Length: 324
Image (cartoon, rainbow, N blue to C red; front, side, top):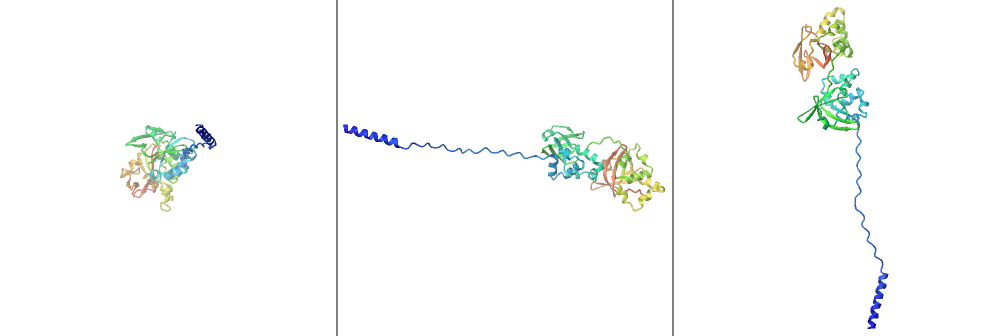
């Protein structure tokens, strides 16, 4: 019995020694986190100003040229904000023939500036706000009318075809026509306007030689189909010089009065006529071909509706000669 107890004690001692010599348990490391890093936010692209945006867009080359000619580049690159109703190149091309070329002349800079400023509204007016308006004051100081018809937005009669082109200093809405400011009450007579316009120096000289200045400065109203200097220059050699001689005053007077119609006949009315009696007492014929208006079949009306206090001027590309 003692022997068994001794053996059991020895076995217990050996077990304790082995336990003491066993290596300590190594803790299992926690798995590394597999969470993905937070994505870096993509910076918003830098917006260009109104002018640079228009330059970069191929639809506004004429508008950009007009802004440059009017000296408005710095203004429209300014802080703003501005809302620009921008006519496309096609919109400018739809103006009556010769109108754009005339507006780009240095002597017509103020008129061009007025037209461009009539397309600009102070502030940044997004499309959602435009549709809630019936009118808006332009930088020119004259209001544009705004209407919604069948889901389309119109500025005066121009349709808004693209909206909300955002820029660093405002917003651009694209329109399909050039909008023209309402005409102010004209204070200059037909003669005053012809004198001030560099295209009519020969016509003015002829009016003076014929003694018609007082007549065409009178109350009227008159409609004058005004030949340009180039039109007079295209007469056969020596014709103009002969007409300006004192002995040919009556012939010159007859030719000039053949360019004048009594009353104020605007372009919209001219196209509905087939003829018109002149102050000379002889008719001119009127025809419309391919959207162009011709007098006596061959003389084209190239610019219309230059309003005067005593009538209106339409510009023509040749001199009308009365029938013999």
